[in-house]
Image (tube, rainbow over all chains, first blue to last red; front, top):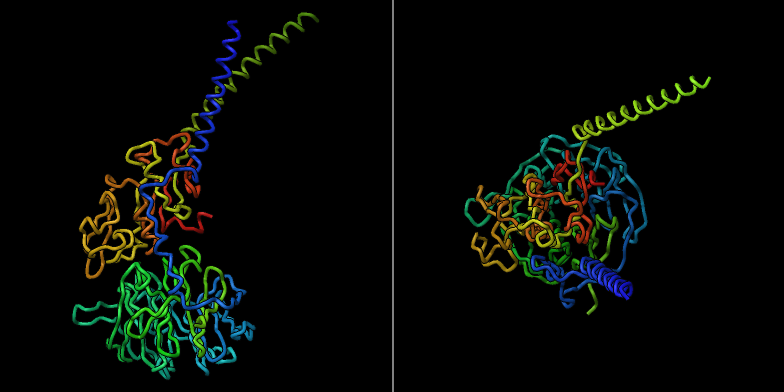
Length: 322
Length: 191
């Protein structure tokens, strides 16, 4: 009789122990834990109203590069710099030629008669056949980090994130001037570049625009470095730019609208020249979390080619038909 | 012949005892030397694996948590609009409490020069909730990150945060390399 009660007690104890173990296992599984009061959920800023997304992704061009670094477009050819190469690719993705580089590229710009490749602190000039014509090293310093090149006729503009300056060179490689974007009034500040995201571009009218990422601004300068106009928009919502360094990249559509690319919350958007948001080209869901801001270029048909550094491919976006 | 046999057994036992003593002494000595010169292991967070879930604030056996926010100043942009300091929908870029993301106001915003600001973590107030880390990682350079502070950590046999960490970002590291501070510790070196 006594043994029977001991057996029942032991069985009950075993059941309780197993129950506690199961409950403990289930309660400590990450997907079983109650919501955390301290969690900061930024998903709402990644979500974009589908009505705002005006573009659709139509094609991807996979790259045979480990570290794509920059893209440019001239006529019907894409110039992709990365590793120690520039690959010349047709708009349909056909590899046309490759140009070997002596060091890692940071930026690239192409015109019908020359190809300019910026490295950390030099600019390499090639002819269309890939022959090295010149190497510009004068005018840069040890702390230079060249990030963008734009060409307007005989004027070559180079953005230096390390020095927070924009340089103007002539085709012979002589530095004509440099400017820091400083103005006398308190409206704006000089270029604020917290990370190596500092872009320059020329629009269809030949105007020079410079991104001031620390001010979330796009600024229009004369070729002499005088501020002519600007617009800026700081916001964590889709209408504006957020974080330390946006817009990280930008380009122009043939009609003059801006295409901007952002880091942090990676997304591509279209703005009117006045700074009014037109719509979204690619929402954050299209990109890797905490990925890099894609570099963007646009062709004459307003197709947008985004160089996705994380997926190592060119992603093509076209406007949806209404 | 028999005497020889007895003698050799005794000798065998004596040498066996001597050998055991020598081994025991050698073992103790070796253990002592290894304790003196060897590396202990402590728990630490890999900032590149951390997903800023907020569990470090609630799961640590210490109260407040032994996990604190660390600032890698050389990676910081010294931004006016800091995603780690200001909460979304802020009224103004000011130090007013209503604008701050940190639930314990553990981040001090200091003016450096127009338009640069320095953000300093008050360790005593920090509870390791990672809200600022999430903001900085999502919108900025990712200079804010979490680390287990070993002057506060009791180095549990099984870290209660590591048990629930959804990204398995907490692991044991050598005590001689107890911190994984961004900048010196890179994603490449993390492997």
